[in-house]
Image (cartoon, rainbow, N blue to C red):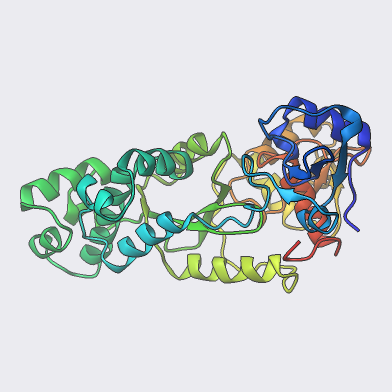
Length: 352
């Protein structure tokens, strides 16, 4: 069975609406027959009228139905159907210009699309489309296509307009940028919510939770460290990452076989590479990590570097816990850390 926090901790988290425990446990309200996430904004019931479950399945089999406000069953990381349709449309034709009128014709409120993409991708829908077009244009130019041909295929009305937009995004003219690299960003569904993945031509450089508060700062740091633009797109490393994550969450993969492009301070890189040596299903303390790198007194610095890890799950910072065995913090939320540790200990199934 999946381990649960103490009832006192769960009750306190539920009454406080603490979203960091979402996924760690679920709360059934006896008087309404509904079960919720800890973060649910509905009015809180009396303490004697609640009971706790480790998974939605347990709550359902106990006779509870899912809350329509906090939607505790929507935890598989897949985008809403209308978002999936938009993404597929862009993948089929990256050069298409999807305007507000086109969204309305497809039954999508432009304001809703703007808010969703701003929250999950760090940019509005129109900015995402523009970045996707320019990313595809970058790939075509590197492949030998002429600027005039790419400008037309990318949906720009003039070559000068394309050159101006390209220069703003890449910081260089098309011919100059083609000699460099770019960081391609893609969205990956998972049982712990949507993940934002990034890769260069050399390997994976980013894997973050799309709702992490530090995501925007991480993207800025990534752009600075690599000196390259960040644009939506896919390459072979992202496809391999997607496949291996599916295997990991299904319990069929314990080690990732991917090239990683790790860039940080010398200390950060030393910590991150040490995290890669923590065995699957085991945990180390921050002090253990500090000792392994030969700096036993740097426990606090190790914790900071751990929190700045930009390639979650693959570089397993979730396997680092407090000296007393408690989970401690986690950038993606305590519930995700608990989920990953339970998965690796064989205490959680893929469809739990």
